Image (cartoon, protein in one colour):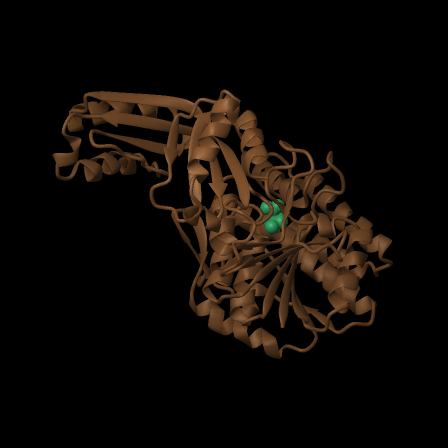
Length: 448
Ligand code: ASP
């Protein structure tokens, strides 16, 4: 049994839905189909999810979001028209959207989430109506009925473990199950969405729940590429990579597959196959537990901007019991999480995402570190890019760090920091934001 998830660009028009239909019915093992909301039809287009968020925000501001809701309805209507579907499904969608738009706003986040989730929910209804119109046994599945129960911890939606057992029953449903991605229900019955692009997460949860043999993730590229194609033209596609490698790459900007989506599939040992709806015969990329390391040390190079570092130096820091705890406690007081913490004998650098720390908070954090920890030096650096060089083979290949550093040196990129301490599969370089592209190109040419 397979779970197949289709992203927004695969469902943006009637023509795309026809491709989805052909893919699903070409393999009888494709039992559960997870759908996103209609995405962009071209690069200037707007995703239905973005229209819904804007409509919800307008209503909350006291403006009228109804015009945007009309735009959303016309997106579904044009798909339905292209597919010669009857008007009833669009009437149902219209009614649902108007009810949600005028729903209770006393919990604004819940209100926004309910409208946001309707993008996928209504699309699942539309897709199942289309499959039925083609004479295939298919049904829309309500995540509440199926038992996809979630909770929010610090504003972050997570699946409750009991969901998995309940979802197992989907195996017994007749025909193809069309399941909306991106959200679940709390025990109280409220809708909660995952973070953006979260339909990948739903697909992975369902794959785990029904104990699928394969989780297929259909998107609009032929493969996960070894490096961002906007930085290096025509990069090598990756055929196979491990969960750990994918985790490291998607952490640093590989957006083909949501980083939170790996966990449920990984826990159940279900391979993930990333494929192209527009070119389903392309090999795609498989994410698996283990692979042969025959392709050299590095499988991919990823990078992400928007980091800053706090460098702290104090003589004899290594002997001071509790220094690290006190330091991290200060960050915790401001709700700031850190990404990495490379350290030396008398110094430590805390690397964090810059958008968490406004100017005011930064001043407070720095002055508390100086006063409470009696640090000799505290220096904050902004606009750093982190570059992750990833590959299971790295640990066993002599000289990978040397090759990477030499490539950066030859390209005249100054390395602000290196972190290769704990991760078995990656090496991290911090460079100034403006050197990011040069660094990536230099590393790609070295390793590929
Ligand atoms: N439609 C949602 C988003 O754009 C979720 C998804 O497509 O996976 O973020």
